[in-house]
Structures are given as structure tokens and as C-alpha cells.
Length: 200
Ligand SMILES: [Mn+2]
Image 1 (spheres, helix red, strand yellow):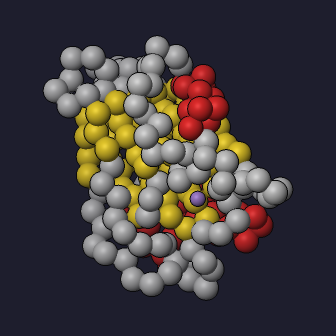
Image 2 (image 1 turned 90 degrees about the vertical axis):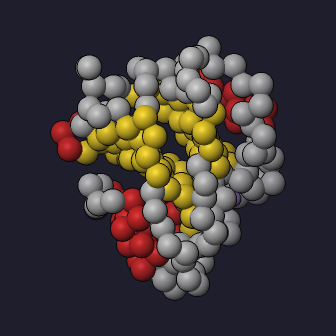
């Protein structure tokens, strides 16, 4: 089987009155293109302070792309001590093996929509409670699912209404899909971020 490739769509907006968003996406290919990390990070609070926390988490992830996801989130937890912390959900996609493993701490929604013919058309990431950088974390274990051509991964921070996926039309490609979700489901009271990754 040929390796998967990913088509990406990203849409974001800062909370009203804020110059910068505290939400930040990560898309990072590693292992000579054999793997890709996709994450949505929500820095606690707003503005520059939240953006700085989110950047710190992103930098930590980018420095250790091949580490297992639980270890990666523990690194973020340690690095972010002393900040107000972040919540995030992250997926590591093995494009050659066609598998996706994912893990989330906090409330960033993660959903995979399988293309037609799959027994479970929609799988939601079971996020763990907590804040990276603050307090204690529960035990973290990534879970893995197969990824096939036309399957679509979506991460959305809590600036997006969590029912965003109801009635979503998957005919659109990744960027129009991200734009559609932002246009129709942004709560407009918080930073908002949607990351769409569609396999082909
Ligand atoms: Mn938020």
C-alpha cells in the first residue's frame, strides 16, 4: 500500500478585543516524511500570556517529534510549570503504516470521521482531565486507530461549539471544511482554532 498523504486545513481567530490568539496549531513532519504530528493547543487565559504558553508547548513538541505522545505531554507539563498552562490534543500519524495515535489533556475536541463503509463512522478522542503545566495529571496513554484514504481528523478548541460536526458535509476539501466550521460554529467569546487533516 502506498503511504498516505495528508491535506491540511487550518482556521483560527482571536477572542474579541485580543490582538493575538492563545490557540496554536502544530503540524510537523518527521522521520523523513513518514510521520506527522498534528496538534491543537489552547493556552489558558487570553492574549500574549496565553500565546506564550502555547508557543512553549509547541516548541517542546517540535523538539521531540518521535517521542511517544504520553512522554511528550509529560515534557510539556514539566516545561510549562510556572505558567498558567495549556490544554491540548495531539495526533501522531504514521503515514506508512496508516495508523493514527492520539491523546488529549483538557477540552480540545478531537474527532476522526471515517470514510463510507467503516463500522464506526465517527470516533471521538477520549481526553483526560487536567492542565499541562498546572497541578497533577492523570495517567496518560495514547490510543491508536487505523487511518484510511478520505478519513478526516478534526481538532477544535473550546472557542468552537462542540457540536460543530453535526451535519458536516465532508465533500469539501480540508481548508474549506476548516473555514466552514470557523464561520458557523465559532462561539466568538474565546480564541478559536480548527485543524483539519484529511488522508488521501
Ligand atoms: Mn479556549
